[in-house]
Image (cartoon, rainbow, N blue to C red; front, side):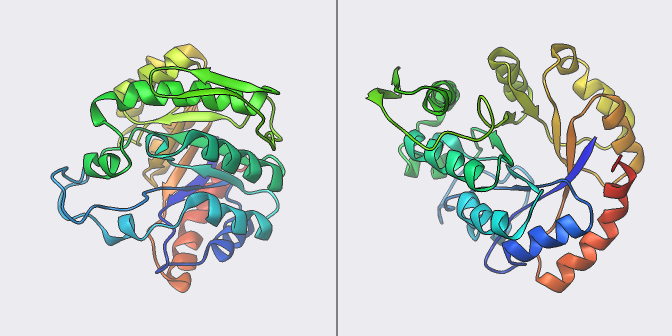
Length: 273
């Protein structure tokens, strides 16, 4: 099982290239970045974590711009989105961004997507929260066509374009691994589409078994983000067949971040083989 970290990269914390180098030096396999284009100042949607929404939600860097800089500063670190809010994005531009990053990084991209939770944020992008799941299905189909076909076209309810040329194509074949983040609905969508699933971590080994019991029979990849920094829980995820887990890294200045990584590095080393 591979160990990475998941974080919000902002203008107030460690710089992306410094974080990437620090992760490689300490033996971490991957870096997964969260995404929010913005946070509406007035909203009714409650923060899923409860209480006030942390400020890093509205200070998050664009993940693909950040990963471009991180890719140039690292050699082997896997660069993943955890998750891209695809339903708020133009699909043709996103296809080019992901493929360009995969090319420039030498095939190090993992593409995690989700439907999000902030309804006001979606609405600002013209996305109807009631149909965001159906939109995501079409987007993923269109995206894979753009990545794999000489001339791609798509005609659906939400996505519609005539044949196009769109390059570069990803280095990874047929395209970067796709994971869908979320709970039961995301699990069911991942199963139906034949892609990976990213659930949030649970707190006990017994809960791990229950969480993954149904999905593991599909043979599709599982990635947990974030998982608690508890060896017993991590062992349970490894035994349950998780491909990768990421550990939460709080957004902080460089010195504080490096100290936090030093503490987490023992867990990365535990599963290095």
